[in-house]
Image 1 (spheres, rainbow, N blue to C red):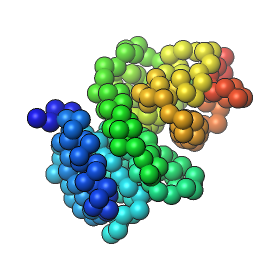
Image 2: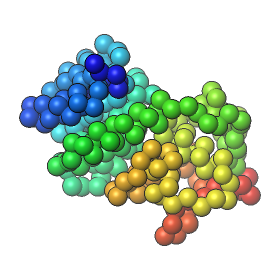
Image 3: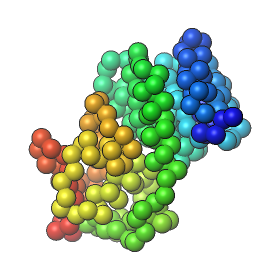
Length: 228
């Protein structure tokens, strides 16, 4: 009996879809399949999806556009991209559109299942922070998950909010990228350092270049509360 959640697996290669279903079924997840972008968006409209596994190279509507539309309509549903591309630009673009993670083909099915579990555990886990947080001119409310810059609402993705909240809750503490992956993303990853950098860049783009996140060269990031 599936108890782990409902996964939408978007992949045009039937053999890979079967492999995903096999391992996800075994892990206790319900799996809905989609072979192209149009079918994926149609399946999303039926509701009940907890996480999307999304191949970038799919027909009808490409994966990046599907990611953009899902994120616009379903901001709280996590997306893990599957890609055979070696170019970093595709992965960065997907992350900038709001994808939570990416896995490069060929991948280990067991590692992929572990990523799914980690992302869902983080999303479905309790929110530890309850009090308001500040980061320079930015105010955050972890309970309502709202963010304001100089009193004006700013829309952040779930991961952008969680990353900034983690840094703001521990001012002047230097976090390695690996530690941020563990605390914010819910796992450790040998390929994830760039993921953290992209999300920090997104925060600076949305909240201004004077956002008090300081890069510690060769280590990671800290929040400097002295920056107003």
